[in-house]
Image 1 (cartoon, rainbow, N blue to C red):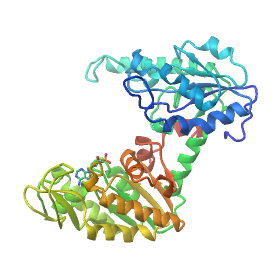
Image 2: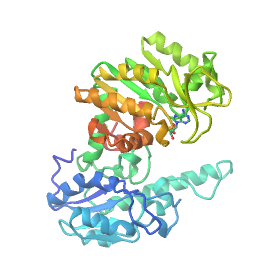
Image 3: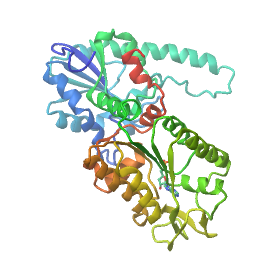
Image 4: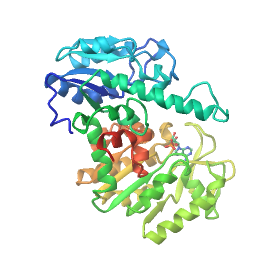
Length: 416
Ligand code: AMP
């Protein structure tokens, strides 16, 4: 079923959203992007004459009630954004009466799902090494099913619009879908957009395809790099990874971030790229600093010849040109991870060059997907969010999708 074809009139819809918004010490929302992201879905259901039961997690309360993570703190903000009063159910597993009383156009927000350990379905207070762990796990899976059934009992249909948690097999993101027939469960608009964006870079590829992988380490990106190797024309590897590659090829990298146990892996990636005919683009020069700080002294040096006591914190000018050249003519672009320590204003140049080239390509008709926490922070820092095709809301979920993994939250609805 799709959200556009479902008849919500007179129906109760239980919608899983990601309202895990950051709060300040007074419980005020500091960034409401996630709430805004879910509004199209929520408003569509209300406009069609349905009623809403909204559910979400917030933070990591680990199965215990904790006022710090109470969703009661965001009731007013949600109400204001939806333009209608929002009722609050202070116990998400005891909301049957409040849900039953909902009239068309009314909204009920459930308290944080993760106040129940059943949401995540992991046994609490017992170590994996404990002989009783397997039993506890089985018991928890059984009570997770019951918890999901309780949530499902509140509504006629289920909508999942929480891409950020789509890679988790939790009660509200996946297990609950078992209680609804194929005609009564669907993805929300945000999820549909995310799925389409991932499809554009994994299946429906316009060429040339350039992927830019940055960030600090090879080890955390290896699954993605391997999956992309079969798909891309150009693969730019930048950021801290640069120095593992430089050292693996016999270079000296000073005190740059370097994974000494991944040198063989780096060489294997270089070989694999050659074998597959992928144009692997690595940094040739860098902005080296004598300290890990914004005010450090700097010099431009070759990435494979960094003086003792210095560390590469950003891509150098020659490298920026190489990166731009591989990006500008691309028709499909994926960017995950900055090219330098972009948190320091003096080391944003490499990432800015990438962002500029992506903006130019996008203007010329490329599809560009930016995702994974830090590159999103980066593009926002440059104020360029409106110059790319799509910015993903999912960190881990996006990365797993790009690795080629099936996301449980999506599989539960599409039956894959
Ligand atoms: P990740 O979470 O793996 O995507 O890494 C993002 C982080 O990598 C950011 O906080 C950057 O500051 C950091 N990073 C990027 N380039 C470098 C570098 N050359 N040295 C150290 N850290 C870096």
